[in-house]
Length: 400
Image (tube, rainbow, N blue to C red; front, side, top):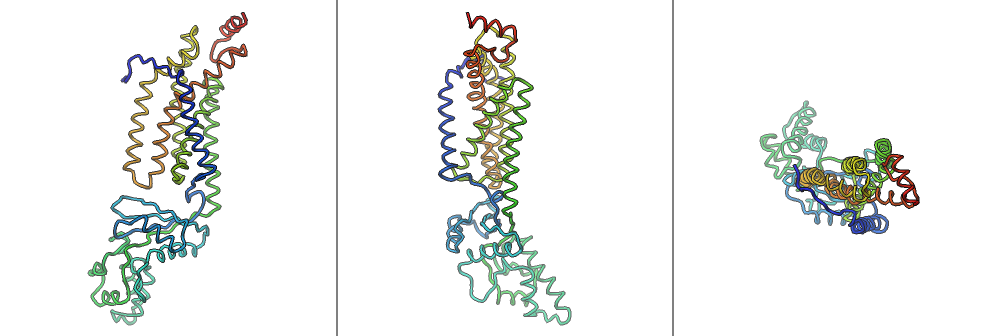
């Protein structure tokens, strides 16, 4: 399938426009990383506490953030996750402790921040543990259980919490919902001493600072190893200059992608690193397709200038590039629009990466080859990928 019939676009003639475009976005990203937002690392890398909260209604992000500020949690990050109808929010706190006390501390801080109108003397059943419910029932003894009170109320407390978490998704809207799970006397006792907030803390996770730093190091090494492996592969497959051009191109793509995250102050998580590694492979594959066609045409069109050969090669692979990149872009765009908040960073990196990776294969990698060949010609050396005898004739012709 071809989108273009014998295209003849002078891509190299527009190289200065491409260079200006790349410089603008690269410098903007660098300035943002150095002076504005820095590199916005997620909790995976910087360490901290993740608190998963479910609301009974659609949460107001600004209201949640204002509640965090009033409680003194000024650096808390609020992020929706899951399906919109689930009303779930992820709150990231800068608590870098790794003990059990840190888990309770993070949960308590969120509950205290969000419970602004808690009735005095009552316990929030949506955030009470089964142990708290069991101890309350043991004290009240609404069933007059006698000697087997411990066993009966332990089972009853676990049943109440299990109904709340598994059947109602972690949040009860009314204590009447427990009718059928507990008897009337137990329900009356619960109504006297418990109330229901409009949220429930579902889970608390901790990433220690040491683990975060280790993940940072591993992420950097993963990117560097992939670039080095690509350079070596292209060195043996083509020539060293092809590998250098591809590495410069992929570095350009990665810089612009990370710069985009910095410009919009969007956190970089482990899934974003996975997307960047995917981008490196995708951009490299697209670049190799163009390089392979250039190498074939150099052998067939020995009398033509390298710039003309490169232009012809790009035009010959243009339909393939548009088809492959277009379909891939539509896929990651759908993932970005409908994949949910958890995949938002991953899909955003791919959306930017597919666009920049396709552009750089044409606008960055190919001009580097031509610029290198022009530099070698000025020094009287053999042009790239040209047989030795032809190179000697070209050198003699240049001297003459």
